[in-house]
Length: 302
Image 1: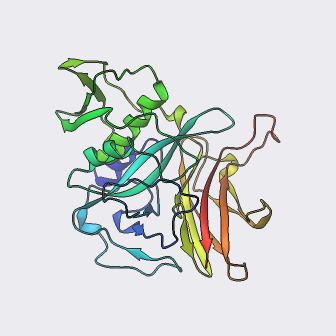
Image 2: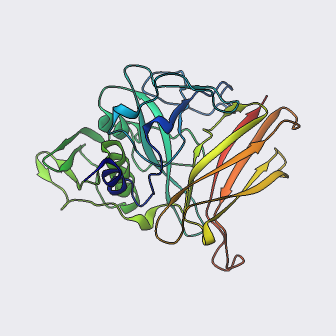
């Protein structure tokens, strides 16, 4: 099995179209707004990061970018030594009920799997999301013998199925393999091995830009979606909710899994300030099915 096959098996039905050199860590230079809490392993300084595509390409260092890359107007850099770029899944609302969305976060630590598990025990960067796990819910996480073992703390149960899937997707993404996840409490196995369930995923996700990113002139938005006829509508809205830009992106396919999408957004003539970028699924039902799935990111135009 080659690397592309391994990644396809590891990424929860999202087509891994790019390699690790497509992953960029992006630094948000805008200050935090509204007193929102930001918690990262590095401490109080926010390191907002993003992946340009959906692939968890953490398996092959031979394709890593050799240095900083200029991309659009966004500040880009490669991860620094001692940090990990990890996928972290969080819970958000959709017309079909709560579903999982994903952030790519830079955290400190040599173990990506443990770092990703620790990350979902803290509030997400995007205030539209929540987590199903309180701090201290988990102990160690290890990958061995074709599985992922996770130690539970006293009082933690597995009755919230979406929270369980949040942990499963996060761990599998960090491990780069679709391995069964076993939860343990005081040496006793608490389940028969959890596997990823694609039904719990939002049908559209934004990977880039990250929440609160400062942009100039234009930016490139990227993500993954499973949208009708491979069409991903997007809008840029100002503080009043008025649409100031709109367009659509396309994906390589639709119907069977999430595929990557990309859109370039021109902000050159917009006043400085805060805007909301919205990516949506196309809704052939005209709203009868509850409306499209959507994901949002706040950006700062400077």
